[in-house]
Amino acid sequence: MKVQGNSGKLRVTMKDVAAAAGVSQSTVSFVLNGMEDMRISHETRKKVLAAAEAVGYRPRGAGRPPKSVGPGVIGLMIDEIATSPFAAISIEGVQEESWKNNMMLEIVMTGGDTVYEAEILRKWAHDGAVGVIYGSILTRKASPPASLARHRAVLLNCYDESGRYSSVVPAERRGGEVATAALIAEGYQRIAFISGEPWMEASDQRMEGYERALRAARIPVDPSLIVAGNFLPSGGRRATLDLMQREDRPDAIFCANDLTAVGCYEALKELGEMPGRTVAVMGYDDQEIAQHLAPALSTVLLPHREMGQWCVEKLLSPTAFDVLSERLMCPLVLRDSHRLRAD
Image (tube, helix red, strand yellow):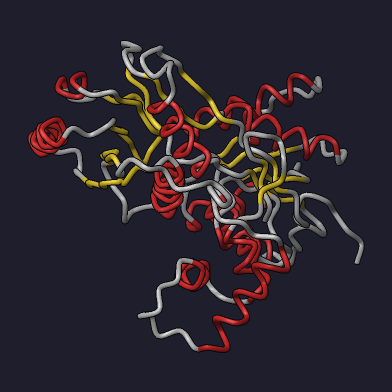
């Protein structure tokens, strides 16, 4: 899937190459980065290289002359990595942008251990790190350690209430709004929303966007169409069964994330319904599974790669110490599930 870069042009990603070659994104990364020690067949390497040429993939920084000064170091401190696929996407964005600017990346997972965070920050100060990115796997209000102030620093996917540091988060309300507006544009009036866990800011903000779009279209917000989920297939299935067994059932369901939509699909099929045929479905996140559901899931892209890139750009900019709170757009990815088809 091509995404829009900061220049407004469509950028071909490794994900596009993987889809064209019929291999995993990891295989594409190993081949394009010249990792010969991986056990990848000559035929697969040829197929990946041919696909990269066919779709017009260019590595970040291609065509730029190497810089004469040795690489500096940017530190990335994040609370969790293994619990979410989005951590890897953010890290990849940070690393690509760092290397393009002749910077090496050091990554530390802290698990929220404040003592460990302080020790790492002390090390990076001693090593003369160019800057530090303090990140969270969940979009939330954070309390960075006091020693972060010794560094040129930005916050990734989190923000501090005091506004001391520049930060970047997804524009979740706007994402929920554009997703709901896309369903309204198809003519649906009874649009349900299956939320995530209520303590997560992302769930609340996506619901706020949903309500905002309904009001903008002068469609009353019906509380009975808002059902609690848990950001997992189990919650999506349970909530969908509840919604569809009501007398005045919805004609479209907006799921707070793609895993919720997986459960929604399961419940609809159990009931003899057809996602994208008898009931429209919209997801959120654009996880890998979204394009492999039947029908392919219309959803909203979380800009984690772009957020990582933004952090490096801000750290290295002349205005690094000017505090800026940025919300990056979450673009629609329209596939098949949001529009009812007769076939």
